[in-house]
Image (tube, rainbow, N blue to C red; front, top):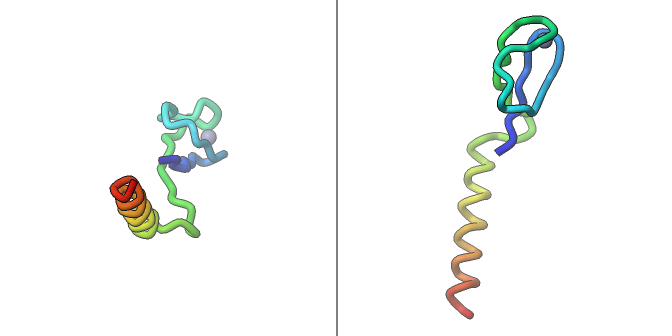
Length: 58
Ligand SMILES: [Zn+2]
């Protein structure tokens, strides 16, 4: 899962960064507002179920 992280000066997707080397502030995880975490998991579950059914019918 790609998480967007934010410090006081920029955004990053680099999950290994904890402290920003520019502003020396810790990165905080932010979720893109258009993707709700709940919906994302629900979509994932539906996809897994569909794939399992497809595989079972072969
Ligand atoms: Zn920064």
